[in-house]
Image 1 (cartoon, rainbow, N blue to C red):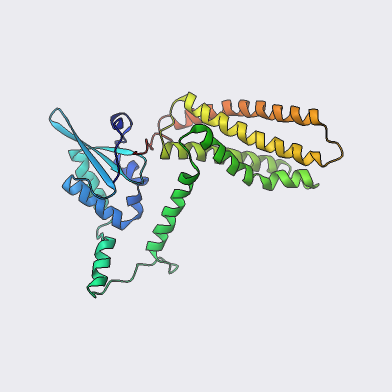
Image 2 (cartoon, one colour):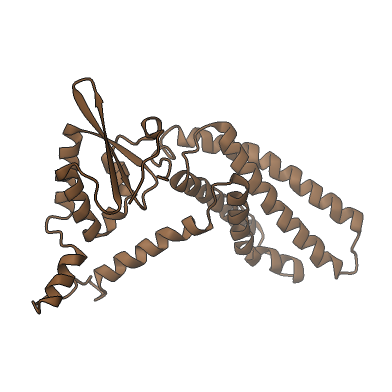
Length: 281
């Protein structure tokens, strides 16, 4: 059963379409059917939690889904609108339990619907859910550990640029620089998005900068240590130069962090990352 945090009032999402966009129910007819029942009966069910609060003459509902990190705030009116919205998405929802019951009774169960390429849509939904869980597995509530995981991932991707340029005469030129910062920034924004989605929304500049400086410092540390290690087997290895290179890399990482954190802060503007909320406990 999903649980709703006690501080849900401050972090709850109010737009049910945004909440549903990141919901597992949007990709599963079974979960969509359960969500319909929750909204229709105004009662919690299976992986859904539902709390009510009386504010004056109006009842406010707080909805939480097991695999959805955000809490949704609903009024009586928006509850009905949300239910109509889901019915429009899944007009003929059937649950897995009903399908299993039909099999047990010997009844005919329709074959799974397939897409244009002949693949089962049920399997496609399952695969998409597995993909969604990948960033959750490498994320961590601890900002340092979270940044470390994503910087390691970026470091591995950057090997396609680091190794050829340091162990061979091959050079990527300007395209290499573009690709380098493309991978670095892409993985960075993905780390910010993941932390906001799975733990808590990152809105304050101090929080953004903390995640950013951890990410950049770890990444540049790995890169310049690797370069120093490669130079160790060369003819012109100088220990002092390698140490200075590592220190210079850290300074570059801090300067880049200031720049990236500022961009992230102004880009999100309460929109880019505010769509995700704190994960239910």
